[in-house]
Image (cartoon, rainbow, N blue to C red; front, side, top):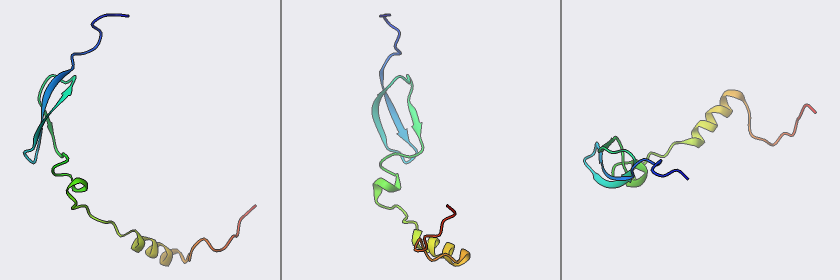
Length: 76
């Protein structure tokens, strides 16, 4: 095996736009700026927006006149 072929794995500081900072290890040898982290991401903070899937399905069915998968018509 070749010696010294892997990049250096160093500790870096990651800074989020919300102000949160944390340390991690990376081959990137400089501080890292990120736009979103676990402290401000809606999924982790519990402030996520629920998408109304049922309303979209109902609008699709009204537009195209389909009621569901009950009819078993096929072109075979």
